[in-house]
Image (cartoon, rainbow, N blue to C red; front, side, top):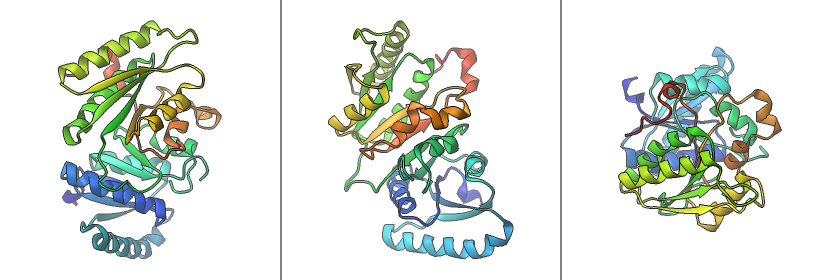
Length: 278
């Protein structure tokens, strides 16, 4: 079981979009030099033997397609808890999950996908289709607003640039008057200083405030041929937000089908004021 540690985990339910998630995981595993683990959640123990055989067949199919053989793991539980439990147990590098956008894991809407993600200490990469040919994260969109947890995304932006020839596209929220909230301005200054200190190429553009910030971010991402969007979830998000319009769900289920890295705020950084990134 030690070979499962630090894997990229793919929640796998035998659907096409789950196979798309595998394709993304394969590209990342080669960059990160990690293994891939297919995780299938069952509702009762009696299903385990049959699903284990099916999952191993899928692993063999993936091996023939991608020339990489993933590990397989069957767990009893709920997708809303067990994915994160396994990821933490195995100290996973990343969870790559497929979704059907706002209409349909693999029958999860954007809001229910968000419910799976909330609470995880491991970042999720949410995808809606296969990677493009010769896929690289060249243009990475990094939305910036007034929330202090914006700073937590920076280490993941740096992580991506360690493995890909990425340019960070800072996209900042503005007020109706086109001005910057003082907290947003401070976050932008912090981001720029961090990226410059790490010699990471970046570009900054301000929103026009003619639509919601989530929609403007998606339009900006389309216009700049983004390969990835990095977002944070809202701290202390309430259950009704899953249904009533947390902006993250629209980013996750964006109609351009751009992959989205989703990171949850770390409560252990609150005492440091989010300034502990070196």
